[in-house]
Amino acid sequence: MVGLFSRTVVAATVRMPKWFVGWVSRRYVAGSTLEDAVGIMKRLSSEGACFTIDVLGEEITSIAEAQYFLDEYVRVVDAITEHKLDANLSIKPTAFGLLVDKEQGMVNIEKIVRMAHERDMFVRLDMEDHRVTTDTIQVVLDLHKQGLTNVGTVLQGRLFRTLDDINELEVELGPAADYRICKGIYLEPEDISYTGYQDIVDATNACIDRMLAAGAYCSIASHDLPVIKYATSALESYGMGPGIADPRPNAGKVRNFKGPGYEFQMLLGVRGPMRRKLAAAGHRTRVYIPYGEKWYEYSIRRLKENPTVGAQVAKAFLMPWSNRP
Image 1: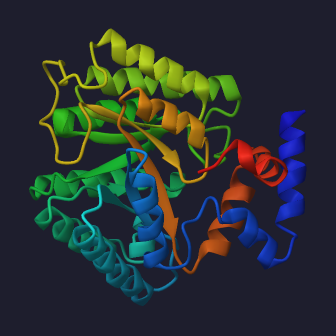
Image 2: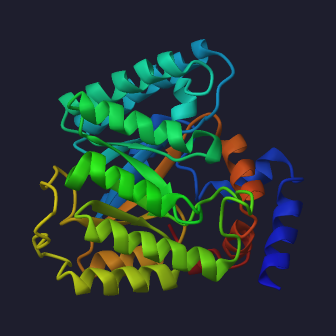
């Protein structure tokens, strides 16, 4: 019933005028400019949050389009430094040309990662749909081989292959592996992914276990209470938690602006009360801050790709007081 309701809300919202979509998305998107994003981060910093910044816009059709993202991320790095923000970068490999020209796309990604490395700043390669899973992981491996260890990937719990990917990365990177694990926003084909809610939750939890056992840095990106409860229990079983130095004997080195082997991550505007509760308990919490001129395309894509977002949209519309960012 909830699924049907969410799909109905999504179907109605994507047909609404652009101004209405903008009204709905303003809690999930920082704005169209970098200045908008900086303002949001300054405000949420008072709640103990840290951030990862994403310039909206994804798959490009010509390699020349990647220049916009290169230029904009230079501005982002400068803004983080200037305003002394506790923030890192999230980049989408396809926005830098990975599917258009793999070699040049790699060159473009390396430029950003190297620039961030010089500022002691971490870069997260967002995981897009299954077409680029292997290539995205390979980019991380190649960059680590060049000594650029300030980069990690996202893995999606719903994919059948993810546990194998974790095992491969453990062999290649050891405790230097740094993940964001999420259930996965992309509704992938059933022959390569779990499609039922509980199956996806169980698979994601299994990935958390594997990452923690490997000594990797584990960013738990979920708004689902069952996943968060499982994660906190798993952390306790390893003696990990707020204010405790990572006790795992195979843990990687402590990174600048990172937690003690783990952190929780949430999207801007989603489950704010839960994020504040985790922060109040002492857990490191990171907010995903998307901004840019492509806010409309981003909003429509998120709604179409995962209709369960519809319930959050309806709640924001009908009860805006219940879930402030």
